[in-house]
Image (tube, rainbow, N blue to C red; front, side):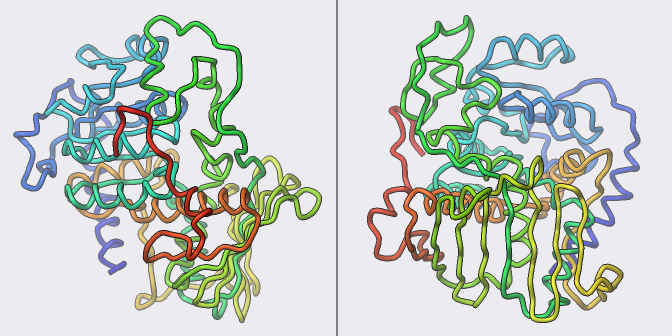
Length: 435
């Protein structure tokens, strides 16, 4: 299974490079020119729409605008100032929108990159899948646990490619340390220690004095399915990440890469129902500690620590014969015994997919997404991986709020015998939004 992935990734290293670095004159490939099953015909560029053009959205706009395999033909952002900035930077013919539904209605767009605030990821993603678009969605995949299954089902039902922006999977140290765990070079895995940063959301929304809505700012679209609040500036500088109507906090910002790395590395060993217990400020420098005990015998301990700034320390995987510590935000790893760092993964062992890093991991995973769109093969982080990372992050948030023992049923995505806890799985959408 994984050897097939590696074979096609190696092909990518040469086949894509053959396109050269020059960017031809702009042109649009209509969907009628695409190959069967919605894939792009070989040798053609993927036409892209960018939805949300803040920090990450602008990065994706630049990446997909300058890669020879793709062409950005449309950009959507609710902020008129952002649209004005993008207009100055874009070549003629790039259409600007403040309503993502108008962008999705175009038949000449093959794929979209979604980089909006977290609370809007799910409903934009489902709409994109229904409209026949392939999707690059920034992490997390969703805001609320119940949204994950809906998103996965929509992507699979409509036969779409979806890659989640957990680009740290492209790191060499990340992949190799994960292969050490998968191949049991540390013996039988029994404990994972996941070190994140503090900053879980507690208040639902800001209680600030209202401000006039700037001209051309589509505030109703920014709020989307979340409860209504008057315009107050919460959209600025990612302030929304401090409020639970829009995010669970730092866990789903940079630190979601750590959660994803832990799950990716240990996936075969994380089976069965989970006993969960959350503690709030159990000791100095620790905002929260949430312990997951899997039925398969693995324990995962997730902490939000303030003594590991500015970057969290990653994940330590402890086995019966040693350990590996993956510090993925610093692109390093350590092992015990130290000799594990120099071991070779044999051909008949588990090999995880590899992609070209290029100038940075964002660009490498963008290239991986475009290749997946063309070939209809699975990308480096498919929709199921994004859903698992999102659910664990959301369970950490719920456990921090309830601070008592919980039991999670993976098969049905519900807490077992706990109606009060299950109330946190779902948030009714503001009218007229539907998922």
